[in-house]
Length: 585
Image 1 (cartoon, rainbow, N blue to C red):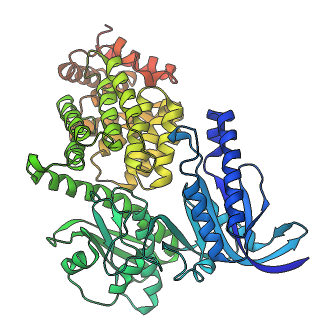
Image 2 (cartoon, rainbow, N blue to C red):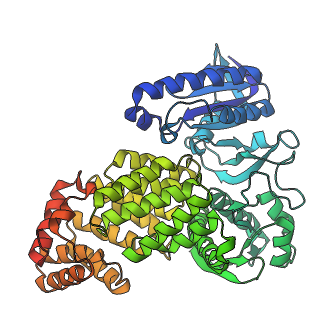
Image 3 (cartoon, rainbow, N blue to C red):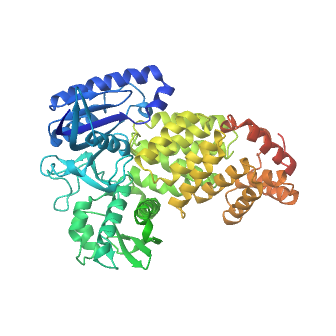
C-alpha cells in the first residue's frame, strides 16, 4: 500500500431517508441527476470520484484549492436543476480535508478521508465545512468568506480539528472577509446587521484562547440566523486590544448593532457578560450574564454561543419593530409592515391576529414575492382556525394553505419555514410540517420558535416525551421570548399527556395568571382540572373560557385537524371540558 497527500471531498444528502420516504421515485431520480452533475464538476476541477455508496460520495483532488472551488460549484450547480418542490429538494452537505491517505487499489483510506466525512456531517444543508489544513492554502485564491467555527471534536477522530465554514453564497473580495468596511454584495438592504467584537479578558493572558473561542462560537451561531447580517470574525478581530466607540465601529463596518462582552475567571468558575448595543445611539438593547465551571470550559463555550444567539435574535427583532413603528406610513416598505405585524403574531387575541393579517396583506401589496409575508399570513389564518376565532375554520385553513403555496421561495428563511411548518401542523399535515421545521433548524439551530413548533408537532404525533425536550430547548434558548407562554403551555400539555396532571395544571394556572389575555389557555386548565377532580377550578376556567370565546363548543374543539393522530387524548380533553360545563354544541 502506498501513501500520499491529497485533498478529499465528502458529500451526502441532508435528510435523504426522510425525503425518500415522502416521494421515493422522484427523490431517487433527482439523486441520479445530481450525481451526474457532480461527476462532471469533479472532472472539470481535476478530481476523481473513488467512492459512492447510498446518497453519498467521496472524491480526491490534487490540491485543496481545486477541491474547495469544486465544492462551491457543486452547491451552485445544484440550486436550479431539480424538479422537486422546494421543501423536498436535495441539499448536499460537503466536507473537505487535506491529509495523508493510504492508497489501496482503487480505494483511499485513512484519517485524511475520515476527517472529510466527519466535516461533511457537521455541515449545514447546502453548506461546506473545511479543515484548518485546507484553510491554510486558500488565502488569495478563492473569492469566498471563510468563517472559523473553532476546534471541534469529531466522531472517532482522536484530536480536535479546526473547522471553517465556506460562505459560498456571498462572494467577497479575494482573500475573504470584509474589506475597508464594505459588506458583501449578498447582504439585503432590509437586513439589520451586527458585529461580535473581541470580548475583554478580565482574568489573565492564559484565558485569551478561551475568550477568542467564545467570540468565534457566538459569531458562527449568529451567522446561521438569516434575519440579520453578521460581519466576519476576521474584520471584527482587527479591533482586538483597542478602545473604540461603538458609533465608530458602526460607521466603519456599516453595522446597526454591536455585541460586546467580558470574561472573568474566579477560582474554578467562569463568568461571561454579554450585551447588545445600538451602534448609532449607543443604547443597550439586551444584556445577560452566564456562569459555568472551568472544567467544562468547551461545553460551556458551546452552550453560551447557543444561548446568546437565541436571545439576541428576538432582541434585534424587537428593536427593528420599534424602528418600524416610528416611521411615517408613507415611507413603509414590505419589511417594515412585517416588522409591525410581528408583535401580533403569537396567538394571544383575535383582534391582534386580525391586525397582523392586515399588515401582512399590506406587505404583500408592496412586494408580492415576499415569501416571509406570505408564510406569516398563513400562520395567522391557521391561528384563527386553531384558536376558534372564526365561525368558518375550514375557510381559514384554506386561506392558510393558499398563502403557503403563494409563499414561493422560502427555502433559506428559517422564520418563513417555521411559519409554514406551524401552519401545516395546524392543518393536520404533520409530515410536511416536519419537513419545513427541520429545514428551519438546519439553517438556524438556535431558532426558539422552530423548537417550540417541533415540540407541538411531537404532541400532535403522540410523542409527549420528545415534546418535553423540545419545549425545554426552546425556553432555554430564549427565556424572554414573546412566545414563552406558548412554549410553557406546550410543556404543560406534554406533562398532561404523560400523566403528570398536577404539574400540567400548575403551569397552566401560572400562564393564566401571567397572560390573562391568552384565552385558549383556559381550555387546558378547565379540562385538566376536571380530570384531576378539582371541579371548582375547572368550572371557573370554563366560565372564563366561554366569556372570552362565546362560540366555543366541544364539537368544534374535537374537529380541529391536529387532533387526527391523537384521538385518545382528544376524547380525554373533550371529557374534561364536558365535566367542567362547556357545552357540547
